[in-house]
Image 1 (tube, rainbow, N blue to C red):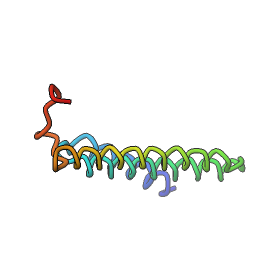
Image 2: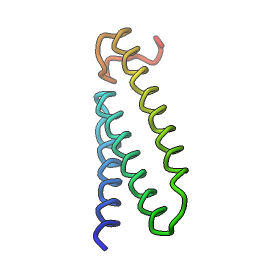
Image 3: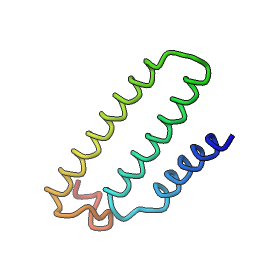
Image 4: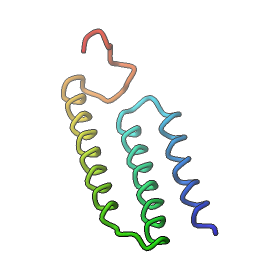
Length: 95
């Protein structure tokens, strides 16, 4: 009974951190990964409880790894271009 409450709490904590922190790109990417991991746990326990195949969970993990790699490549390119990952130091007119 407590497990769904814990999973929903972790999901909403990740959304809260994502929406409240707007200074650094790295903390935003970490909160997105936290949300993805909590969604994976919710989906995994849902599939286990109804005795479904776990193939979809592997597809979900593949897409989440691709999303993480894309976020890290954007972070590296921003740090190489501007020297930091502060959102306030970027001007959208220069991009």
